[in-house]
Structure formats: structure tokens, C-alpha cells
Length: 193
Image (cartoon, rainbow, N blue to C red; front, top):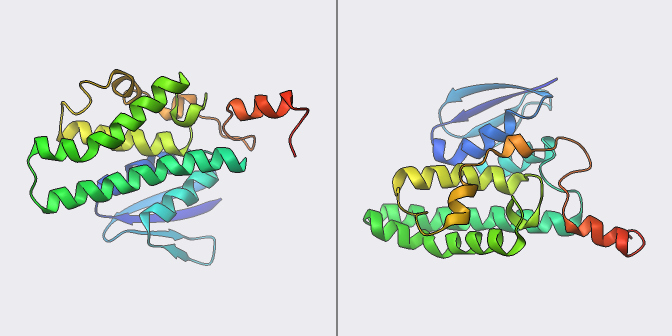
């Protein structure tokens, strides 16, 4: 069993990572306060100091990143959207924006999330029927946004419902990874590559 030591001081950067790590059965996890570091004890004490990289590492271990290249790209695009929105949010906080102004900073990406959930009619982002790393990432972020700006999801019914879901309840920890309509398309075409 691999053990990891996660040291962190900013909970808003590690909620999705913590949720994902808790579903990695092959990991023993220890947490400490301090500047962000994920130390991989059994892999020669390797250190990951970037929260995003650590999240991707944990997501790979938890099998929440699809192995299919196109599916992976869709999941990673949503993870990158969250990172970009977080940068905008942090900039607005440093500029001392009011709660309403903070909400306007994030509304464009929230509308894209709402549109994705409406268009695909799937339970999870990107048209997936099982949760992926993007869902672990976004649900953690939406909970924090709701705490900071309670009405931010008021006019986004699909997103409001999505934010209450638990990705671990619809999570598949196996090498077949997340499924979507791409697999059905491959079968209809007589198989994959």
C-alpha cells in the first residue's frame, strides 16, 4: 500500500483532491497543516507541490479520468474551466469585489455548465453516465461558491440539482473508466481503432 502525506493550508484548493484521495483504496492518507505538498511516501518520497497536478495524480489512481483519449479531453476541458474560473475568482477577491460582482465573474462559466447538463441530458458533465474527475472537481467548487454567494445558482436549475449530487455515489473505480456515448458509437461502427 502506498502512503501519502498531504500538507495544505487552503481548503478551497484541496476539497476535490481530498474527496478523490478518499476513494483511492491503495492509499493510506495522512494530512497536515502547512504549505501545499503531496508527498508520495512509497515512490522514493517524490513531492508534488502543485494542487492541480496532485488532483490529476489522485484522479488517475481513482480511475476517474477516462483512458479513451476523446473522453479524457472532454473531462480535462471541464477541469481546466474550473481552474480558469478559480483564477478569475481569486483576482476578484484580491480586487475586493462585492458579492454581486463576484457572482458576475463566475456566471459565464456557470451558464456553460448549465448548458452542458441541459444539452446532454446526462447526470454528469461531458455527457457521462458515471461521475468523472470533472464532477469531483466541480461539485467541490460549486459548494464553495454557494457558501460565498448563496444565490449564484438561483436561476440555473440543472446546475443547482447537479451541485447537490455526490460523485462518489455514481463513481466507478475500475479500469474500464467512465462510459459515455463514444463507446456505443465505437460498437456501432464495428469496434474501435
